[in-house]
Length: 149
Image (cartoon, rainbow, N blue to C red; front, top):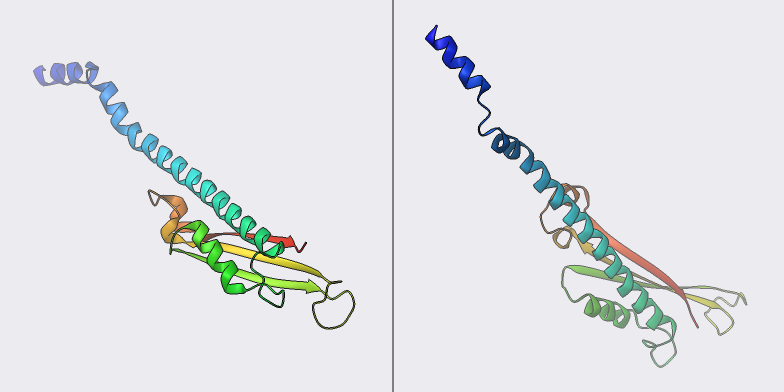
C-alpha cells in the first residue's frame, strides 16, 4: 500500500514539468533558427553573386574589357568578376554571342552582341551551419546577359 501511495504522489507532482517541456522543444527551436539563418545566407549569397554578374556583364557590354580590335577579353571579364566576389571558392564564366543581322558571318557594327557572365560558388561557400540546405545544394549560380551598347 505504501508503494502505491508513493507512486500516486510521484505522478501527481508537477515540479520540473516546465523544464522537461523546454528540454523537449528547445532542439526544435534551435534547428528552426539554424535553418532560417542558412536560408537567409543562401538568398543573400545569390543576391551578391547576381550583383557581381550584372556588374561584370555591364562592364563588358559598354566595352571596358575590349582589346585593340574591339572584342572583349574573356580572361579580363572573368578576373573582374572573381575580384569582385573576393574569394577563391568561386568560378566565373564569360560568353559573347551575337545575332548576325547582316549575314556576314562575322561580328560587325550592325549586329547585336550579348554578354553573358555567370558566377558560381561551390558547396563550401553555401551555409554557416550546414543544415538541411547544405546537403541538397551542390552550389549556387547567378547568370546575367546584357546587350552590347
